[in-house]
Image 1: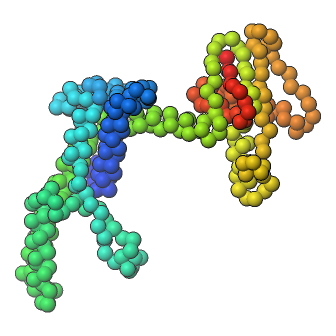
Image 2: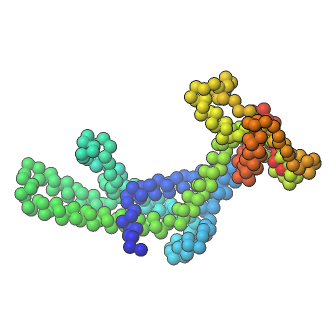
Image 3: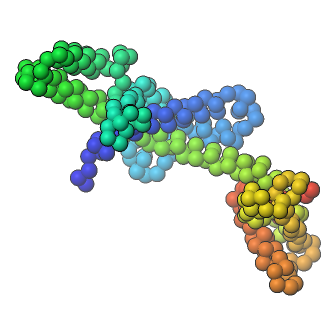
Length: 308
């Protein structure tokens, strides 16, 4: 209440929205490539949800879509294409001019509606008129020339009014299509999680576990990722390292419980600082990683991972 959303969204946000929508559309183009569809069907399904008519979403989003009769029967991709065409090339970044904090105008910039590309012809006409008045004022005592001052003030007022009108139209388009953009961002977030899991597995020699219902845990050569990462950071400070990979070595742990085929419990004993707590944490961490779909990091010589 009391907040004008049109005042809260600026041209920088408009430019960012254009870039985000372009990313969504580029990702969709990637997903409909036949080669990608053949090799990564699971990832493709996540993105192709954007091409559905309803698109899912919570109650608030559904009500918002029903309130917009002109777009509720269209797919999210179609809506985003229209939004991108509306926002594309509307905002540019220009130098703001020297000021006290940046006297040489090296870092000062501002966002403004684009000019010179026939996107906003009326606005270009007014800006040229403003420039003409400024050029006429050169060599004259502009401060005492009331007529030129009045003309310049009127033109700048017209520019401000027109810019305000154009910006409101752009923001309105963003608001109307926000549910579709949000669903697209949710799809990208899911992809980001998938690729992050894969990157983690590649970085730490992760193995995809075989999951069953026999109550068995067999993880040979488990490498605690946090401990391994800490060792790696220490190694970068030129502390004693393993000559083979440049990192301090981390002793792998074998986690084995036969389950139904043998004992179902395990008692760990030993001296203080002997690794008992680390072994127990490793069991729990391996189980959590399986539930989260994360590859389990193991030593290079580990043959397989089975969490059943």
